[in-house]
Length: 90
Image (cartoon, rainbow, N blue to C red):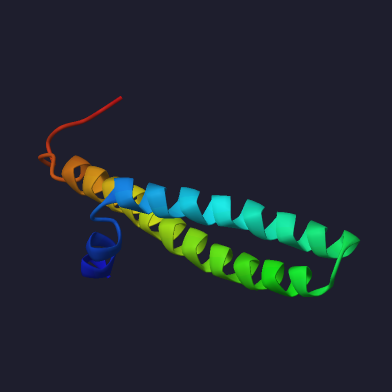
């Protein structure tokens, strides 16, 4: 499980870029759907296709961001558990 998180979260900047590109494509897809509402219905079909692609790209980017943050939490709690048993915190 840790290896998978390390692989997914190894480059958070790239994951953020993917997420933002997917978000931009999502907005573009919404514009095509709106265009199809007022004009020809095939614009809506193109918009739905772009929306589905945008959701996949955004989800992949968000998964990388989430994996990176989760991995940081795991590493932080592991280093906190390595105290000696005689130490007491109030």
